Length: 566
Image (tube, rainbow, N blue to C red; front, top):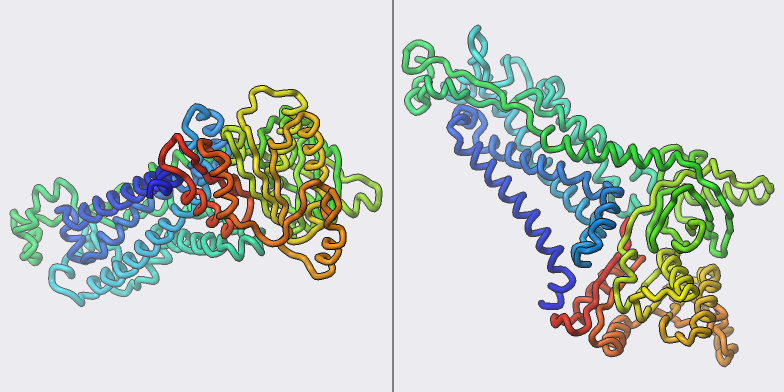
């Protein structure tokens, strides 16, 4: 339990606080509408569905306030840069922004479903009351407003009106339908299988959030949920008059009750985050319009494209990422890529693997211009960023474990390059004493573009007598019998037959239990940062190992898990 607290304690506390606020808001507004005397007559028409509609609406307001904040990337980068003095456990929460964004979205989806179902029941009951299907009080309440100097309670103003007509002709009905449909498209297109296989669908449908928020702001303008006014409650004693609906307006004790709709309040919840997000997008647009100089393009094995670029006043840290846009492919699509260059270099670079329509089209365009010797113009690329990630904290740990899968090695390329430059400059401020690097690939060609960097690091560390600073293990997870036979023939060579490095390639997958055990024994009093850029399944394994092998005693070994999220 203590190990779990080390890695997840603060995250759990934040979730408990968030859930606690949601529960408090739901219960408070449920009781407000279920017990409030001003809603007595409204409850008589609608029953418990009134509270079941309004309480989720209040929770929706709170979560719609939060949903945009985790995707304000410039804000998060600013906070990360401004809170360097905070504990690492505080900064780690910024790396879980997308997880929190999804969690808030799930809550919005759930509350929307409850709110919608409750209001559909409300419409049916309001219609039945207008038809006179219930008691005398319900009928009288539904007919209030048919004469001058009366204010209605039942929004269905005619016995011939149907619930469908109200749903598609009133402000609340139309905006409710728009909001619900937008949310359905946003949530369904965000499923992992769609996001991975059809990123363009995810990208475009996600921008329905603009319609969602516009509908949300105007949703309450119809004031369809009404209550008795304060003056009317003073003049019209509900306790005495509720049993005498036929005497309303005829005896002084029971004047005709007056009703009014509640003032729209959603805009007060979402206006601040909406303005903040607008400024976020304006800043992104400004930066995307700045000139980008395409310094070099390289096509590596395994169909990996390297772009080396320069941009005025561009400043980066290790492990950060940028968004790229190619207008000739799509004016609106922006895709995130981790930078593989080091802050010490006079350019920034990304490595792009062909994984979808957009990346395939980009690589095809570069290949075409290379073949025709026309050059791929920098005007064809726009860059937004850089944005911060968990890897920025890699040098804050005494010991770091870097785990990359396939093209997921890119943030660690930046880190290892930066280490190489720090060695060359004899940087005395380097706090990190040891780095363990693991790279898992399915095919041998994937190693080729990165092997040169590791070879340079090997030479630099050997020259400085620091061979023990970096330990790296390369794992080939996919091979055939002919490859295995070739490796066996050349096994006695000093360098690896696959990479040409001194460190031999391992075949299969790492035994993470053994790796963590060995590192804990080698560094019994150190703080170890574990950084992953790879699949979620591996993330769960490493996160579990971090919890299992961390000691509650701060004087002993602790493992902190960090994962790249885009």
